[in-house]
Length: 306
Image (cartoon, rainbow, N blue to C red):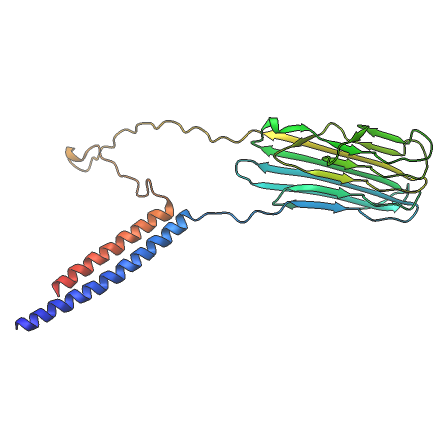
């Protein structure tokens, strides 16, 4: 009889040990999964900046007209790194000085548009008409105003040779900054023609160290007798204040709830919110883990009784 009893206790202990191991492994796996879901990083990989190129190396036959516009609005939050841009493109082709045929498109990107190149090496056939414009606005949330300065310009160099003077109508001029933010109308409209046939303008523009962009247009373009070029480029940086979270109101004391269904000893007690202080996923994981541990203790008691 003693041998039988001893064997029964051993079997119960073995079953309990096996059950406890299984429950422990499952509990550990569940805890790791919950923590992984709770604290895993969010968000996808950064998207590469966009480059816009249009109306380059086109209409290089005499007597053609070319008109192209690009409007860019960039949005950048310095604190979060969230960026986007909207680009409107208009492209028109025709015989010189006639009503053109145009196409317009609007595209939104989950990235900044940092470069615009258009109307370069174009309309080099003589008697051409070129009108191209670029406008970029950078909205920078949380930007430092000290990082904004006047945009550098390189324009109207090596252009307007021969023909009736003055051939250049450029502002600013002279402007020959190497590696400038705005580069336009260089090496263009040579070969003779009317006065002021090179009209290129950069209105007051700014550049930001936090969002660097570049504009290149109307370079090496409209080289042929009787051609004209009119190009404008502008760059505006707007610093927006960072959004601040509202200051939470101080907690107000709630009157103690009186339990009218019980005696005076229970008066003044209120229920505590079930999920107070726990993130959603972590709270569920803790509850599940507690259930598994309870199952383990139950298995232990059952093993002890066998």
